[in-house]
Amino acid sequence: MSKCVYVTYIRTTPQKLWDALTRPEFQKQYWYGMHQDCDWKKGSSWAMKFTDGRTADAGEILESDPPRRAVIKWRNEFRPELKAEGFSQCTYEIEPDGDICRLTVTHEIGVENSKLLEAVSGGWPRILSSLKTMLEGGEPLPRTHQSPAT
Amino acid sequence: MGRSKFVYITYIRTTPQKLWDALTKPEFIGQYWWPAGTMLESEWTPGASWTMRFADGRIADVGEILEIDPPRRLVLKWRNEIMPELKAEGFVRGVFELQQDGDCVRLTVTHTMDIDNAKLIEGVSFGWPIVLSSLKSFLETGIPMLGVHLPDAAVRRAT
Image (cartoon, rainbow over all chains, first blue to last red; front, side, top):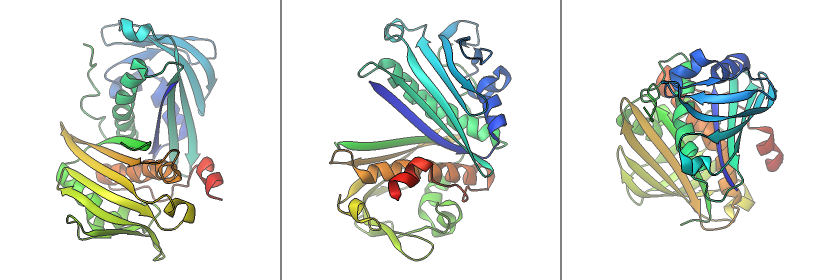
């Protein structure tokens, strides 16, 4: 079992945070230029796309409760040693607290010393820092505009 | 290496010097630290004592400066003073590392403690995301986050 938990507090509304997490026009601004193809309904397919259209990660929506909670079944598709680990599970939880939202991202997989978890645990702090900056009115952070794989 | 560990990384659009000042100077600490009005007091020299005080004057945590290399690295010895079961666990090590990254600074806060399932590590793992989210907002927008409440899970554990 490998697990990564990241908590951040963002001055925004649950709906704006949900939209920023799920809509491609926002994702492209803070997620290395990448976006996700998905309608965010339970059982729908989910795919993370590089800027050139290749699939980085793919899976399925296990739970969706806008604008509060989503659970993604998530497998890497472009690095064979990560793909071999199979599916991880990523949970978004949005909890409003006055004019602030607490966002908890929990990413876990049933593999010891997972390379996938090692990779995402380095990415989440940068992505979510950029997301927070963007939602609080700033320009998304540099180095989250460009995909690391392109 | 400690057996209980907490690591938090955040990227802030600022300079290492401004971030260092925000972490060590009372006039900045008083603006963003959570709970509101919490103050850190130290001469910020190697071997100096270090105290965290709540707004009502109670001492929350104490310790000592183990290493200090402005504006890059700070290592603290740290013990909780408010909750007896946390104080009984003794000192935790707290490391702050600031690395320039383009026009941002990557701040890494690491706490390690040489006991299993340390309650102090559990406590700081609720507090740091609030304090560091407030610090990031304060440095990037001028507006901190002082009104945040602890998550229900943390309140349940504390009561």
